[in-house]
Length: 323
Image (tube, rainbow, N blue to C red):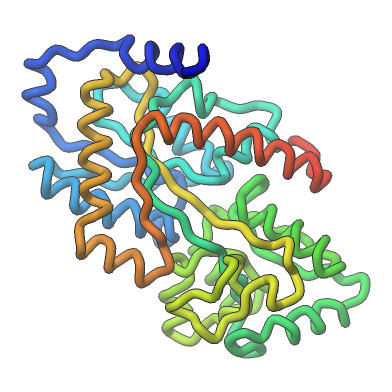
């Protein structure tokens, strides 16, 4: 065990919780903060898990959408909440990217939060409007974009520093296109404007786009996984579209404010992991392209540190200047 891991373990044990307090927990509803607008993949994932946790914990787990600032507003609220186990938050890949693209951060993802558990991951899909494109029509989409010459392709994003923003920049580099990234407050409003042909496309998870896709309002052109999705067998991978560098996945995890008693954080870890193996929850989310993956608290802590370091390198290599 390294000195760093020993220190991390001691920090986990630094806030004791009496057995009486743990026995009474929870004695009121909990809230799970989702830092994006309703209707996206994070919202769908949070609601499925919150529903099951509410059943097993005997208290309602209320999903609270607090969107804005590329997911930073909701997480700032969670960081400042009392560390009593009644406020949880969903963190995801954009929160690991943010320290590299914003010079002013209202919280520190490692210092201001205690890990609970990983919850899953999902590849991204490039969606475009179905009036012009059909399933898997990635080559026609790229050809049309190149015909625009100096007119940039408008790609909707969930804000600067989001995974959809980086995906747009990666598409620009890989496909030799000129792309303008248009920020939105989440995938739900972004995809609505894709369907209305106000922007050219948007990278999002299947969970975010499934409703509009099922209604025939948008088309799925390409998936960023190494293999095709079972749910979308006709949609080619990025490698098949001759964009091999675009293999990436969105991930999600649950955290609580720092100094939350470790006994309570451990209880929440158990509850989240039980929700992830519950059959109806797995079926509900797997059909939307989400691969559920639980973890220990220590595994999540190490994962967050590694992702922050990894995406700092990606942002630097992509030439994205911090704001």
